[in-house]
Image (tube, rainbow, N blue to C red; front, side, top):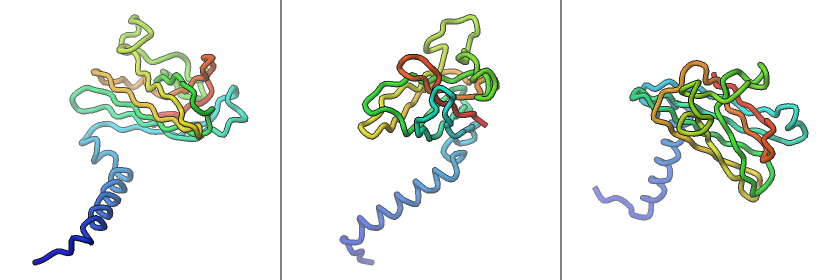
Length: 158
């Protein structure tokens, strides 16, 4: 059978779009049996007025690692934002403090999960962090902080 080489890019594009859709709709396939939690970002009181939207996802892999990715829109352009996994849901004490693998350990990576990011010219940011340990059940939210340190947005991981 002779294939039309002009149609090959279109087939490749269609295959890529189909694969991307499958991965977006079925993250557990991507995570291969891992525990996947996710949530949508909402502004805290200190972020009211900012059109913040986005999502966070945490994957706890079968081999004991944790991967956190975030996508946030509606922030200031070309700005670095700290983000951290927190130990309570967004509605309880503004998600309380940072989640730590060792509660008595340092308040910094690798003992904490920090998907830090810098926004682009449109105020869109993408953060990613991977640690070599599985986050416990107390890792319940991802909080985005303003450059000043104030908590401006939160996503509950459920």
